[in-house]
Length: 204
Image 1 (cartoon, rainbow, N blue to C red):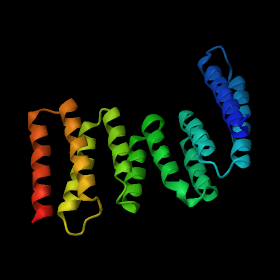
Image 2: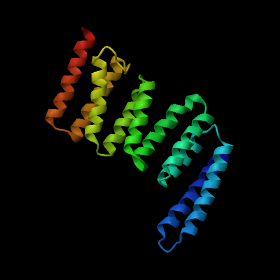
Image 3: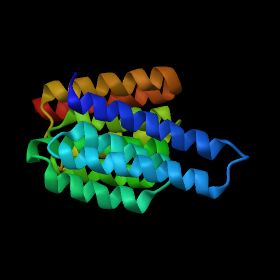
């Protein structure tokens, strides 16, 4: 058996105990505290033992955010980045931003994605994850704003994003699909005209 997987499984079971204790209205605070203390100890042990593995940190971050322990989660994110090798930082922060959308604050999630994209202006995959989270949250206008910011930056000479023509083609396709599902003929036409303007500018 993979030791890391065993720890993850045990932590998952202890996390369920915390959820069950919290859901049981007959429980007093002591039962919830005892369950949380057991889970906290095991998560801490796991992160100490496998500190270079992002999955253990992400599991613990999720546990804290689900428990509305936001300040602890943010402190732990900093600690995790100090322990993880640099090449795992982007994915860990992206996962944390996604979890903020689900269990924490949408605004904090946006801030993390914006920061990541500023530091990694060629990572279209990050932008797509960001947009997908907005759409999943029914924040269609916010998703549009992300696309618009790319178009605006690409049209300016001091551009923040450094997407290739091929990436921009993927971006317009994705944007158009979202408008097909959530927009109307006017919003779809807007994407087409933005794509045409981009092509004209890039070929002139």
